[in-house]
Image 1: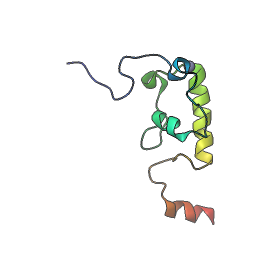
Image 2: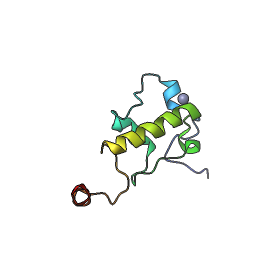
Image 3: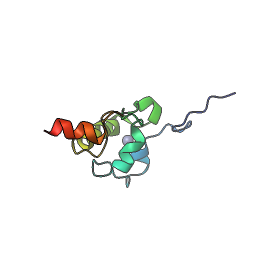
Image 4: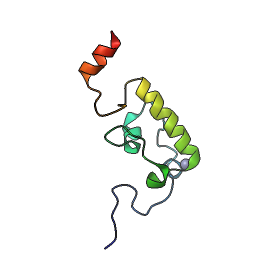
Length: 87
Ligand SMILES: [Zn+2]
C-alpha cells in the first residue's frame, strides 16, 4: 500500500518553472494559498516540489500577502482580533 499524499503525488517539478504563466505574486493569493496550510503555514519545498529559486520568491510573496492581509498568519486570526490590534 503506497502512501498517497495530498500534494504533488510523485510529480517533483517546480510548478512555476513548468508553467511560466502561473502568476507568482502577492496579488494572486489564490496561487499562494496552494502553498500554505489551512493554518497559514508555508509548506516545505520538499513536499510541493517547488525549486529553490521559486520557493524563495514564493516565501517573499506570501509574507507580502500577509502584510496586505490577503493571507492569514495563523488560524486564530479573526476579525475581532484584528480590530483589537488596530486600535
Ligand atoms: Zn521553479
